[in-house]
Length: 194
Image (cartoon, rainbow, N blue to C red; front, side, top):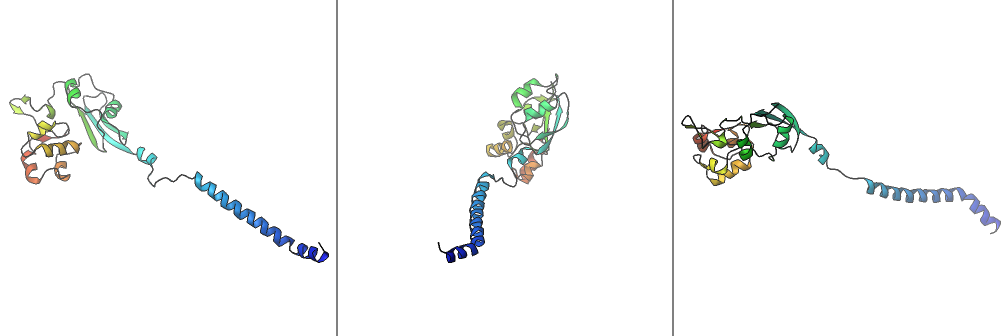
């Protein structure tokens, strides 16, 4: 190298060094941002964790050791509601529990779980006569055939009633458009909720 070239190199030494440093930083930044993106996990706005932590209120009454309103996780089942209410009382109607209480049924906010006492007549046992008068049919626990015994309720409507359980009031049949007003007027005195 002659002196003139050395002077030019000396003159541009700082800009060349800064250019090389800038390129290294740009390449490093691109590489680092690529690594950072692969580590980030995108969650939906309402993540699964938030959903599973939502609480519902359930009223548990009747033949349980500690009746009351309990806070349970969303997706809880009747079995869990009975457990938080201290389990079945000794006076619980065992036949009803084994035949009609679906312990695996999911609960919704505002649900009511009623466990009848021994000897108590329930809507699901509507075939039994009480003082010569048939008891009302509980639309939350009645079987397909019991529902079909109601005026204006065929197999299709009975299936729809069962699939849309639980109900908070008998008027839910109208609100959920399961039956029309005329059919509801025919059956309202024959049905109940508990």
